[in-house]
Image (cartoon, rainbow over the protein chains, first blue to last red):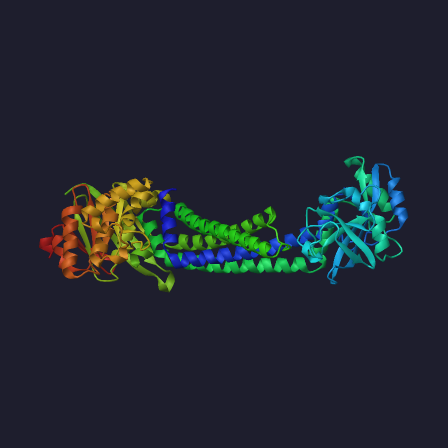
Length: 378
Length: 234
């Protein structure tokens, strides 16, 4: 580190009260921004859990569908028509629904039911206990062993329950890539059993899952499905649609945006004001440096270094605190939906750089204005 | 007397415009030589500090020029003037302007660090200068823990650490008692002044006039007297 920067560092760090106030301001802002954005990212990720877990390349749905769990059932002809589109390798139906199960203790618990195509079991979860073929046994269900699993009273293979006055039997425990958003357990069964056990509307197909022959066939498939009056979305497009729904149509996105903006403004106010006071209090020292022979660019480097050092340290502490809190929360509450993404980190970093930039700008303007003559005059 | 260190030619400086215009220095010309201890004396508001600022490259005159070792400093670029201050001129400010967040030795090392000397080397050299002013044992203390006289000596050590050819003191005894003030100026005269250095002191403390080689008197922005023999003047 060059000597002038070392002086800048000592001037900053040795003024403990100001330095701590600066750090607290930036850390607090980063902590809030990261927490808010991570919670929102977690919610968005969980809201698309089914799409990730099933893993189909193309999803056919009613155009009015805006999230995976609120499907609008489609008539059977949609399945047969999609199967006949050029470029479709195969197409299968899938059922998504909710039901109440009566547990052994007599308690009722809401569950999310996924009905897999009987012939192919396309979209099946990875089993950690049990055999896949057991799904064809009478009343058979797989239970997803995720954060919500214990709400079903920790069932094992052979555990029985009631679902809509039908007997249900746990034949396997499964794991999925991502847990759901609404905090209810998920069970898998066959498509036909699902529509038999759970009261349905006239149409029963929630989605048609398509495997295209090649990536190049996707646009044509989408075009043909559109002609049927339905919508075919790739996995990423569907995830995007769900994210857009939660971001723009539920008010959730606006709330998070506002909280993030408020965090930024609070952080900027605290750090800007404190840094400005710090510069003001050191004004005569900067003037003395100028009189001794320091050049303008050296003073600018000192201020930029002081602001950047504080900002980066505050950023690191803020990210660390937010991550630590999320880890603690997940230990206590496994279904806690928050995730730190590169986007969140980058966004917070850019915001912190803006804070440092604005604080530096104020300081630099002030320091460049001071004349060494003012030091002589006292 | 040695070569000319500073030559001021018809310096004029005014502040403000129109009705608020005040002329602080009115056509001041003088020379200060190497090996000379020059006092600029006069009452408050007589233009001493303004003149000092102009000859040290801090305040640009409205008219006239300043030659430092033969170079017209006000024809230089601002960065070159800053370089000149760093390499040729040492300052001891009236209020010392020490950095309270740095240790005493770090304060002394500042001009060396500005000259891009390695930190550790600068601290080592600064320690030698602290030794010269008799404060080596105070090196690691912050300046606020030192007495007024000690702070003055730290400021002197900082000013001479850069080995300047010209040393400028602004009211060095203003906040010191009579004895300490005399000791400081005696120290300057015997330890700091040498044939290759010019020392200029702005003061209105008549108790220290006895140490001057020359005294320049200012009143109302004008140089009213210049004596190159202090004893005669006093």
